[in-house]
Figure 1: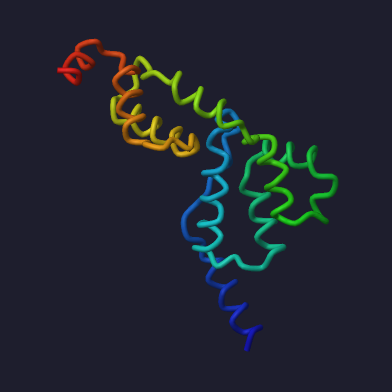
Figure 2: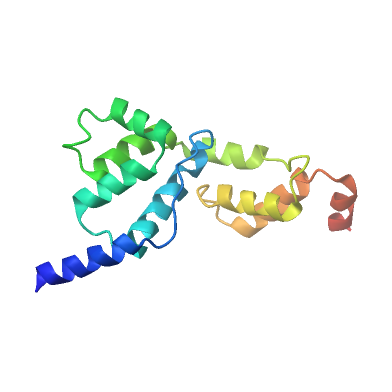
Length: 158
């Protein structure tokens, strides 16, 4: 029956698979990734009941994010998880214009202690939302211009 399968799912969830730490509000650009990780966490732990999923999110998200949710959402008890996440997304990851997303991509340079691979991964992440016609060409151009090492730039150009 449906009730029996729900009990089984909730029993499996009590075993707890993996952990999800609190969201680091100091790094708001990781918000959407955190929400995605929460969805996988809930799935892995068999959390399907909407109220239980909301309670799990609010207890996992961390003190700062919980406090912010209380400020942004009139009643956490009455709100759905989707409404809570939408309010937090509005705060942590507001929609940006295409021009602003491209500006961030075009201005991104390699950090002093950042590896070339980490820099390239960050460029790829930024490029995803830029709507470039030819992403690979743009990545190559930005990589060449944004590398910290002049020696590396010369090696790529030659």
